[in-house]
Picture 1 (spheres, protein in one colour):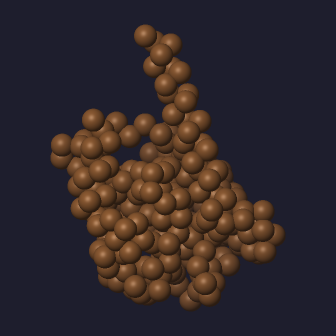
Picture 2 (picture 1 turned 45 degrees about the horizontal axis):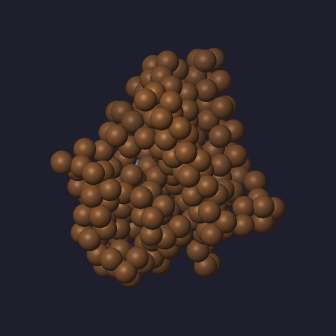
Length: 244
Ligand SMILES: [Zn+2]
């Protein structure tokens, strides 16, 4: 029994990895992206005197290296005609946010803000999960939408979390989605799991094309139908049925 489960799981993981490889091939030429895109300039800033904290500084350097490393891949995955990504990003530990992390672009420079209140979680929590927060925020820096309100919030957050969970962390177990209560517009990991399913079963370039439509100011809920031939409700129903 146990071995059957194991075989089933590893098979699922292999299928998942093959899907990511297919997504990468269909979405971009990663080798080309790496040579054409200049390396990202990443700086770290600590508001007030927080740079006195060696442990946090060490983590910040790891976060900066991760952001730098993932940047060309994410650019390639989110590329669209005429898009010019910010060439520099500042990682700022700040008291501006009471909790969590956020992203914005100021004078053409991407900023990833991290609340100092996250310090304990960052230093003691799961490292991949915490670096995943940086991927989520980096995606926000690269989404390039005309304005914050031009796209439904759950789409914006679902795309960012898709790259965190399914691209960076390579999560394949989505048992945390409750098919009885979940809805596509719950945002974050629920929407991300839905998008991942669309990528795997309908169209490997779905996220790239959806993001391009959002970036070009063409987002509406109808985009799901335009991109996949199915409405968001039809897609969601099929996704929920896949849990049976
Ligand atoms: Zn977000």
